[in-house]
Length: 502
Image 1: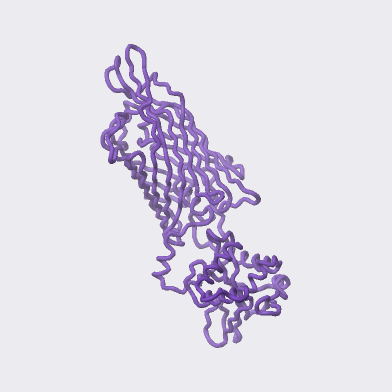
Image 2: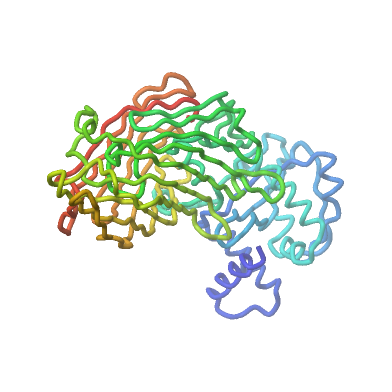
C-alpha cells in the first residue's frame, strides 16, 4: 500500500511546476487533483451513517493537516462519504483518500454521493487526503477503525464511481479489465470444467440480484458432466472442506492434435480439488490446485472409429501407449499467472499395434508414448460486468513418435519425432447477466488449428442444462503432413449434459 501511495504522489507531483516545500503541500496538490480531475476509473465513493458504537471508536480523530480533531456525528440528516482508491496491481488493498460529511439542513433527503439538490445540502471535507495519510503512516488506530468501517460498508453496498467522463469514454477505458484475485479463474472453470468447482460466496448486496458465477445457491448433492466422449462424477460426500475428489473417464489425448476415440485408449482416474488457505479459507484469494491422476489403457477401437456417426475423418494412424497422466491447473500465486501442467507417459511397448501400414509380415506402425505441455493462463473481460470473458494460454508442448518396423516376427523401433513446439490457445465465453450461454476456443499447436464451440440449448432447471458442442482439427498449416497424420481434418459433434455444475 505504501508503494502505491508513493507512486500516486510521484506521478501527480511530476505534473506540477515545482517541488512542494512540505509533505502537506504535496498532499494538498493530490487532493486538488482528485477534486478537479474526474477521469480516475478506480476512484469510488461509499456512504456511511454512524451508529452509537461507531461514534465511540471514531471520536477525537486528530487532523494533522487541517488542524484540530474530528468526531463523527450520529444524526439522521448527516451522512459521510469515504472517497476510496480500489485495490489493483499496484495496491494490495483498498485505500482511503478523503472523507466528506454531507448534511441536509432541511432534512429533505440524504445523498450518499454528494449530489446536491439545493442550497440546503452542505458537503464538507472533514478528513483531508493529508489527514488520512498521516493517520496511516503514523500507524494510528484511528486509520484501522476507519478502514474497518469502510470494508464493512463495501460488503453491503456497491461503491459509486467518481468517474466524470462520458459513457462512451468509460466503456473504452474499462475494456480489458482483469480481476486481481481468483474471480476470473473461478468463473472460467465453473463454466468450462467438467468437474465440480465450489461457488464463490457472494456479498449480501448481490446475492438477491443475480445468480451465476457469483451467485449463492445450494450445491447439488451430486454433480456430473457427460457427453459422447467423457463422463465425470462428484458427490458431496467426496467434499472434505479444504479439498474434494471427483472421478473421470474420457477418450481424449490432451497433448495431441487428435479427436476423441482416435487415440484408441480409455483414460480414467481421480481428480482432486485443493483450496490452500493460510488462515480463513477464501476462494477469491487462496491458492487453488486442480490435479488429476489418471491411467490410460489402450483399447482397440480401430474398426469402430469410422462407424461412429458423430465423428468424422479417417481411421487413426497413430497408436497411443498405455501409461499414467498427471494434469494440474493452479490459480495465481506470488504474483504469477494461473498455470497448467500436463504429462502423460508410459513404457515404450510396440508389440501390439492396432493401426499399422503394409502387410502383416512387413508392416510399419507409429506410436506415441509420452506427451507433455505447460502454459500460463491470462484472463481479462470486456467490461466490469464480465459478460464477455476471455482467456489466453501461452506455453510449450512436446510429444514423441516411435516408428516400429515388423519383419520376420521381430520389431525394430526408433524415435522419429520428439520436438518442443509453442502452443497458443484463446478462449471466449459469453455470459450475459452471469449466465453462461456460449463459448469458443482456438488452439494452435504443431502447426494445426483446433477450433471448438459450445452453446447452451436447453436449461431444464437452475442446476441442469444441455449444450451443443462441436470441434474441428485442421490439416497441417504451413508444413508437410507427417506419416502418422490423417489427410484433411477431424471433427466431432456432440451433446453435453451438465447437472449441478451451473
